Length: 184
Image (cartoon, rainbow, N blue to C red; front, side):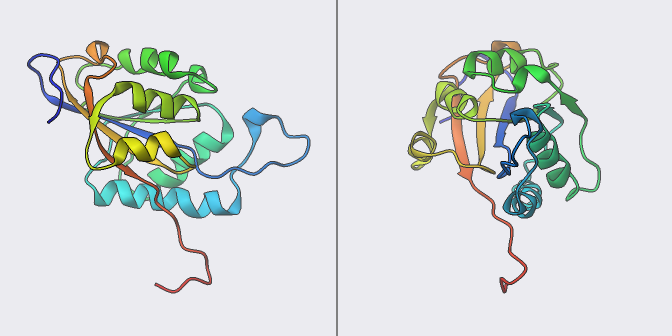
C-alpha cells in the first residue's frame, strides 16, 4: 500500500542515475562525458519511461556533463520534453541535500524526475521508501547501477511534505540500449 502523509494527490518521484560515463585522462570529474554504452543506454531510459507512462512534469538535473547528456538523450525520445532545471547542488549530493531540492518543487508538479549520481540517489530512494513492491528495495540496496530508474509513489499536497519512509518504491529498472551488432 502507498504510504499516505495525509489527504492529497498521488505524486511520483522518478530517480535516474546518469548513464555510464567515460574516464578520459585529465578531464575533471564534473566534465566527464558518457561512454559509448551510456550513449546507447540513455535513449533506452527515455523509451522505458514513455512506455511505463512515467513522463515527468519537471526534471531536476545535476550540472555534471554525464547527467545533462543522459537527460538530453532520454528526453529526445519524447515528442515534447518537460522543463528541466539544472541544479549544481545535485552534483555529489547526499540524500539530505537531494531531498531538500525535491522539497522545493512547486505543488502543481505531480511527477518529478531527478537525474544525478550515486551514492546519494540510492541513499535517497532507501530513505524515502517505507516499503517496496516485490524485491525492489533489495535491488537498490544491492546495487543501483548507471541508467537505473527507481519510481517512488506517495500521497501528499506538497513536495515540501515528503518525508523519509513516506513513499512506496513501485519499480526499479535498468534500461539498456542495443549495441549495433545486437539483433532484436
